[in-house]
Image (cartoon, rainbow, N blue to C red):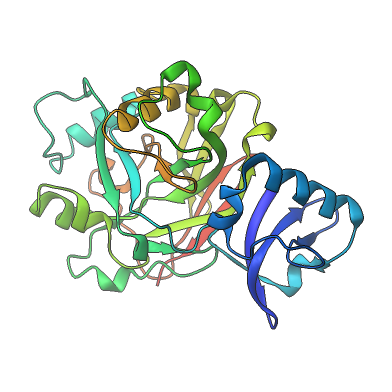
Length: 294
């Protein structure tokens, strides 16, 4: 299923997007399901079964054109976990950019983890507020994000996919000068509005082989990034195992798995975003996350 958070005159709630009919099934219509995505994720398989019954009933269908889509999880309960330098070619391009302050090696020996502030999240179509970056060095990073379902601690890699609820897209927008100036990446990654997310969460059962997903980022229609998720240095089981050794996952937690080669800092001179640009990150079957630059 394609789970969405949407709003109209009746307020904000969650639903299932049916691309075949161009509609959203309102899960709050005629059910007692939560209106909040994180609360829905906590219901696990039982919640998904109830959602499927709601879709089959045909009740509560609304035209997609009549609603506004938001980030699937508009305000995460915690910071978004992120992974740096997790594609081989991007690790090399970033290491040679002059911005990398993570160490001497281009390809990391262990996952490089950082986080983004929850207030950085915005939804599909919302402008990236690049004017907030007083260093004028705003860059894009298209990424696959993992949504955690069943939480836990000390999760073994072989069991990791049992804890994956689904997948969405994030754009790990970054103020490169701030990223370098402060050494630790948090400030440069966490400006308000610097984490577009969406357009939906595709549930894990819809993705048979996550490695076969293809990530493509376009800026003003020009392809800048193009890679398979199988190119990750540290795959999803490795990331879940690494993090859960030191902290407990909860339902609705998010892991942005890293970006691939082709970011703006990788060009000479760098090709940073400017007002009026449009960034579109596509990963099928999730769809396209499109963001204008303000």
